Amino acid sequence: MRHMLNNRFLLSTFLILCGISISAQELDCKVQVNAQKVKSVDAKIFKEFESAVFEFMNNRNWTGDVFSEKEKIECSIFITIDSELGNDRYSATAAIQLSRPVYNTDYNSTILNMIDQNWEFEYTEFQPLDFNENVYVSNLTSMLAFYAYVFIGMDYDTYSEKGGSEFFNKAESILTSVPSSAPKGWKPFDGQRNRYWLITDILNSRLSGLREAMYTYHLKGLDHMYDDAAKAKTTVLEALEQIRSAHEEKPTSYLIQIFIDAKEDEIVNLYSVSPNQEKLEVLKILSKINPTESNEYSRKLMGK
Image 1 (cartoon, rainbow, N blue to C red):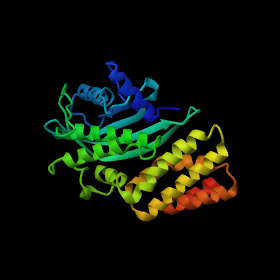
Image 2: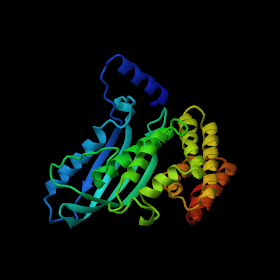
Image 3: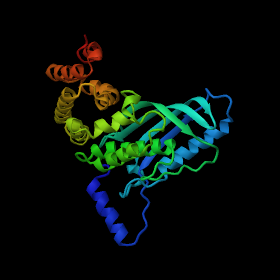
Image 4: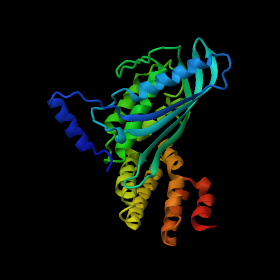
């Protein structure tokens, strides 16, 4: 089984007590920058920027846990530069993705797949990307650190019930440290789909069932598909029921929409060869959560 949190903690403690230095970089974050829309800036600046973001995400210790190379959290940030705003300032769009392997398979399950349309930053060539958890340094490093903690928190939630709370709290602290003069994306009135609503929904007690469902869905469900597919699918269905209950608490939740965006194809594929009664239960849940796609779910699951 991939990393287990208690084992990590015990190993970290043992190494520290023994005076052994440890390297605990947690993320395997792919970074790609597309600057084809911006012709007035030397392309090598954006290649340097890409490298700087890669180093920031992957060479920093975000937790106190020990990760082996194969345990690193697989995620990606694909940044499309939309325009130059002047004075080394840029407007961009970022595709944010996170996945985790399913035990005993070569399949990776998508956990997060979203677009951040409020990606505005300053960058000059060879600029160091400084970050301080307690002090706002720049919009760029605050955004990157915010997503680093979201990646880790979401990953941990799939291995331990609400195991990512510490890192979601860190992401929230970053949000609250951002000044009111910062670019869009951090405030409730910046739109219904932004960093504010993402972390607010994650930490909303009314939606706690969704976080519990992530553990049920992945560790208790998908990770047992190899051993007992029928039982695993029953467990995943229990998780979907938890998510439906959370949807009833807050139908407009950004977090639930993020779940559907990441999981709907996986869920449909998982149950496409199930008995009709199980298909109908899944169809009912998906249609309740995302009614605009109800006909498409019916076509894919029931063939009509």
